[in-house]
Length: 446
Image (tube, rainbow, N blue to C red; front, side, top):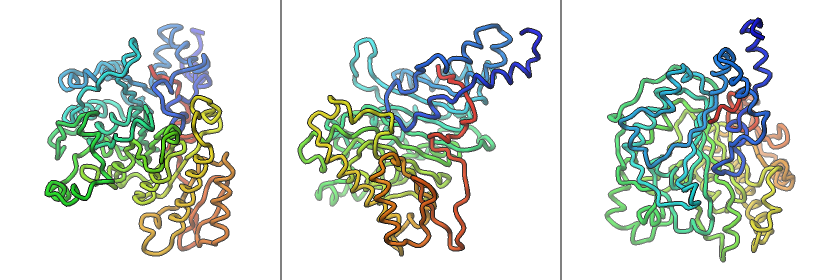
């Protein structure tokens, strides 16, 4: 094999390549180990890199195209003074520009004791340095965070309602930002670009648990404090503008456990959806979604229809909307006796039906009340395997003969423009089967 030219070796190694979990599993139930390699086939390139130095040199850039980073957040502040070791390794081996996807996985669980200690304070000033350090080295097509909802709130410098969190028991959410192609690199930002610091923001504690943003009491609404924050500008979050992202995905996991509680429909999940869309009170009153995002993806398992209304009321100005509200075909959560204990299955489907009925109503509404829905050109449902939901939507649209909307294929509605032209075909970058960069990339997540 030493006589085989490097060009031929590289071509051979391409056949050993495969898509990484960070490209194909973003619609799965969020968990800490959801991207772990489960079979030896996914480790083929890694095995090749261990044969000899020559082979390692050839495959190294492919091996580290998809990075999975699990930092100790207790040492977050140290990053402001010392380089992140992972980034130093990437630069030393000239791998920094090879990264296609970068996944940040955060948890505060003590793996040895199997307990979740009190989360350390995460300050906005620390996050400025974190985003600066990361994106001054890497230039990924997709950046993903898998973390508890409270950690996402800190990363976004936003507040989170936690009063009902106990009834949902949702340990992880996924936030993923993507783009189809790379553009010119932006200059490294400085702390002076951040207009506001939320230096006293904690990821847990009474300040957060009482932040009921969309359900304030009458007294709070009329207080001078509420009036003084109404016109204040929320803290900036450079993550959303540090690259020209075109796709955003939020996966909130399963809400099935809340259906065990009395009057579950009054509960409110620990969700960052309202903060992303800017549909709550300060500091969640300004949308975090930049104008470059034209593709919005919402994934959850049986979310409450009242919570889903947040997306319907505050839909961002996008061309494409993807929604998935039921488990994927391979997810056996509905067959899990422990998960479904004391849950009335009829409640799950009732909330699903209500959510889809409201969505189709908003999508097909005509006139001034339609708002950003008028700009939507493509709606895709991730619940095609659930024929009842999809057939219900098709019958509603066909029965009312809404002008412009038509069924393109199973799971997809498209809206022609005023001249009758269909939407332009664009590369799918929502993290599903057609994710950006899916042309190859061994699991280099390590």
